[in-house]
Image (tube, rainbow, N blue to C red; front, top):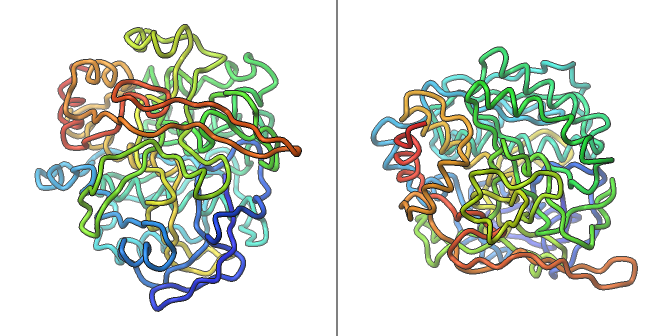
Length: 454
């Protein structure tokens, strides 16, 4: 999902864009799109050189973070010193349309932040050729932004892993057009043994599908992944306990609804937190639930609630008091806030080339994919479905699971002349449907997952 804000910003480090950006805490137009969204929140201000966190805060009033800061925040450098970088593993990113400039943009991103090139970066279109990029097509621009985020930050977290970008030719419209192609593409890379970790930064509300059975009919890739020991991740959503209810994303459900595919029990659902870092990447306060609704004047927060389609899986029996008889989402959370977004580079057209501040559970999911790839490397084999291990580790108080104790994912909005609040969940240091079991200490979690006996 995308929000666009007006701006009148100027400064040596950034280039202001007259029609997009942050300003006044108000939201103007929403991008046209389908009911399933690339879950990425973009501040439409292009930086011509990498700013520091302090510069972002001074010039546009929100924090921004580089990949180096993110790596430090999740304790990744201690892994890199042991040559645990994801070597030999492949992360697959699933994106409709892709980006026409992603290969050169990744090279610019790496040069800007001192990262090595991935050992292998491949782009495939296994279910049909993607039509040429059109910078006037808002949906293609959205997915190009998403592709840039997915590729750059999965690579930043696991710099030694291979990156496989899987582009599909049709965007989703509630299970009718795009999802079957996405499922077919995922089955292709699983069947051809091309992938170890699949990262999906896309979602549609369970309530938006024609029926529960229409969701169950789309599960074959996840069953296949489980049989082949491939880990599948899914973004939990960017609208708190609600979700968009129409194809233009201009209205929202006034009741709780989980997002699929994150709600599938064979998928690790990744929710959102807010980091608070200084210029060196050191925390200035503990992480909290991501909720930028007050900042943006719209329902923008980490997705999470109970599924209406899937019953509680066995691995959530220990949190039955929270989820009841239903599958609870998310399982774990990572950085997703706009105020604390990551710097992403793109040059694909439709927007000026430069570095942009990006958030959303589209950020959180590829970040976690990097941790999983390194855990696979450390274990010497693919770990497959992680959820049983994550809940066992959380129950044991393992250092790799960091509790979240503050914040909530309740969202409020005006719709049809009425004010609505969709009540979410409050973090309490244990499992909640605001952040799942918590967030990750990357180095500790890699060790714990690798030694989990899977």
